[in-house]
Structures are given as structure tokens and as C-alpha cells.
Amino acid sequence: KKEKFSELIILYEKKGLHQKALNLLMKQAARPESPLKGHERTIQYLQHLGPDFIDLIFEYAEWVLKQFPEDGLKIFTEDLPEIEALPRDQVLDYLEKISLNLATPYLEHVITDCHDQTEEFHNRLVDLYREKVQKLREEYINSLPEGHAPRKIGEEPGELGTLRKKLVSFLHKSSRYIPERLLTRFPPDGFHEERAILLGRLGRHEQALSIYVHTLKDI
Image 1 (spheres, rainbow, N blue to C red):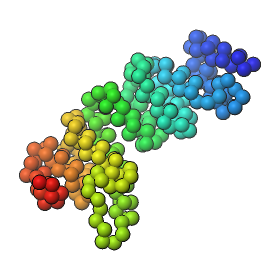
Image 2 (image 1 turned 30 degrees about the vertical axis):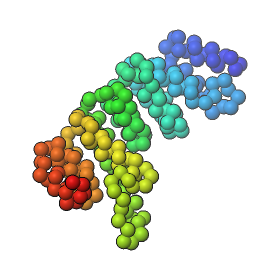
Image 3 (image 1 turned 90 degrees about the vertical axis):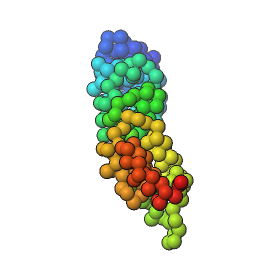
Image 4 (image 1 turned 120 degrees about the vertical axis):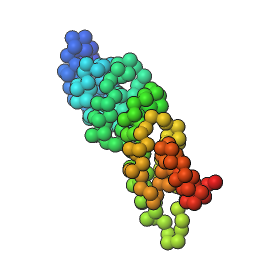
């Protein structure tokens, strides 16, 4: 019987009965005695379907992404021609609905590894970095003892410092985001360096310089 399941998957795949195959894989995944136990077989199956089956991929990727987010992301990031051909805007929208924590590494992959120059992706990554930094920064400021000044940008403790460095570095390196659209989203009281970079991109060099000299005291 155990061998029968594996043979059934191969048969379904050959006949193009992908929904039946994926249903069987999902049901068997949680059964410890099954030769199809675990989520790896589902990931491999979905990775080879390609853009014609995007709705099916979204339907059956969900349980993997919710239970095993890091592994599940490989359905959309592995270096395979079928994955390369998937519509990235649809994949991003889908991942954002499941978790913003999935959207960020997906965009990092698309921009850094695939060299995607789509402005909307670059804008969205800046937005995701900013949203997370803003939340972590508020928590950090509130946790400081009275009279203690926050550490310099990028030197904050833990995830905040790491993410802040990523954000500043990306704003410096990328030329594909739209600064005028992003500037208004950065509050002037906590994102001095980020605002200075964006002002510089907009040609407002005096304002940028003023932030570096008077606020950041970096020159």
C-alpha cells in the first residue's frame, strides 16, 4: 500500500491530474507512517508546475507556507525555469495576504538575485522595511530608561539595527524606487538619514545637507 501512494502520485502527474496528486500529498503529509509524509514532496511538485497552474500553486502552497514558511517560500524562489516564469506581481500579492514576513524575503530575492528592475517592487521593499523599522523603533524608544539617548542609526540592538542598515543601504544602492512617492511616508522625527537620502535623490541637496550637518552631525 505504501508503494501504491508513490506510484499514484507519478500516475496523476503523468496524466496531468495535478489537483488529485496535490490533494493526496496534503492528506499524506501529516501521517507519520506514510512514504509521502512531510511537506517536501508538495514543495517539489508545486515548483515544477509553472505559470499555467498559478491558481493551483496558490491553493496548495498555502498550508505549507503557514506551517513551514521558510521552506514554503522556496516554491517561489528556487532557481528553476518554471519558477522564473511565474508572474511576480501576483506572487507578491498572494504572499502579502498570507504574511508580510514572507513578502520581504521574496522581494529581496526578486531584486537581488533576479535583478528585477520593476519600480513597484523597489518601492514596496522600501515600504516593508520602513513599516517594520517604525514598529521596532517605537518599541526600542519606549524601552529606553529615562534620559538615555537612542543609539546611532544602524547600531540599534537586534533586528532593528540589522533592518535599519538594510533600509539605508537599499536607499543608497537602488535607483529604481520613486523618491517623491516615498518621502512623505517617512516621519521627519525618526527617519533623518533615510529622509536625507531621498531629498538628495530629489535634488533638494540643501535640505539633505542640513539634516546631515544639524541633525545627524555627520559632516
